[in-house]
Amino acid sequence: MVIQLVLADDDSPTFVLLTKLHLSETVITDDEGGYLSEVMSQGCPRLQILELVNIYSCVRELTIHTSSLLTLFLVAVNDLQWLEVDAANLTRMQVKDCFVIELKDSAMSLISMPAMGEFC
Image 1 (cartoon, one colour):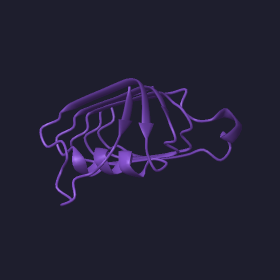
Image 2 (cartoon, helix red, strand yellow):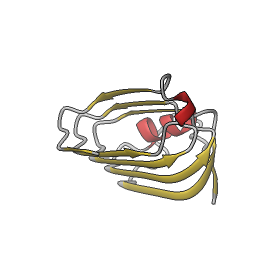
Image 3 (tube, one colour):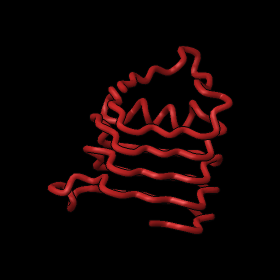
């Protein structure tokens, strides 16, 4: 599956009622993560569960700022170099096989999750 992310022209949330998003074996055409970050942070105000598994894309930076997210799973998000998560109610998070090995020293994560109960 190939997905091209496009935000609404009026800056209103794109997926107002979406509470769970699971994408697997997906190609996301994006501007290095800008649209994906914006859709996750602003376009899905009720998103509680986000699962990205085997994502083939040019998403190099992923920034998620949301208070609704409870669970985040990132598994094999190819090319990811920067992860920033600011999710006050996040209780479960797993990040696996995401950062490019050659860039390990330059890969960066900023995480703020005061409600964290499980981190893998």
